[in-house]
Length: 132
Image 1 (tube, rainbow, N blue to C red):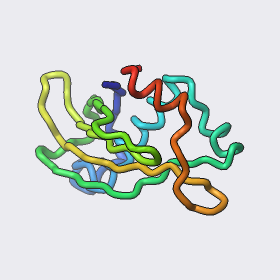
Image 2 (image 1 turned 135 degrees about the horizontal axis):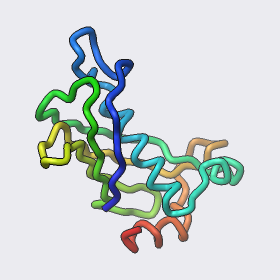
Image 3 (image 1 turned 90 degrees about the vertical axis):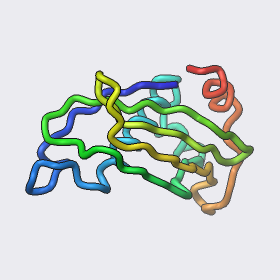
Image 4 (image 1 turned 180 degrees about the vertical axis):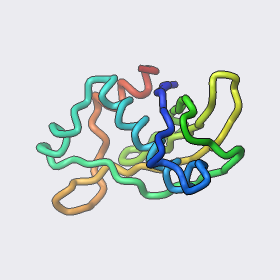
């Protein structure tokens, strides 16, 4: 499980100060990126090695509207790992435990030059399975 803080900025919201629905995906993406950084994975190095992670499928369940100037956090965990893909469960919450949005995001590892599936690098698999 990885936890990353999110502050809701004006740019994340609609005219009523409510987080626009597609921005929940941005929050989840940011948390996955920060998790990779946390375990020592540099995406610039992955790109240099012709490796990229791409979202293959996303399901979101909106529970409560998040609003401008809220301080929230994203909890992320890998719930399924295959040779060239993984599924993340991600949840946007506040400190009181209120759930704002929950998502299942399937990410595929690809050889960027061919956009074809590629095995997830072993060191990343080990770090993610190790709970880092």
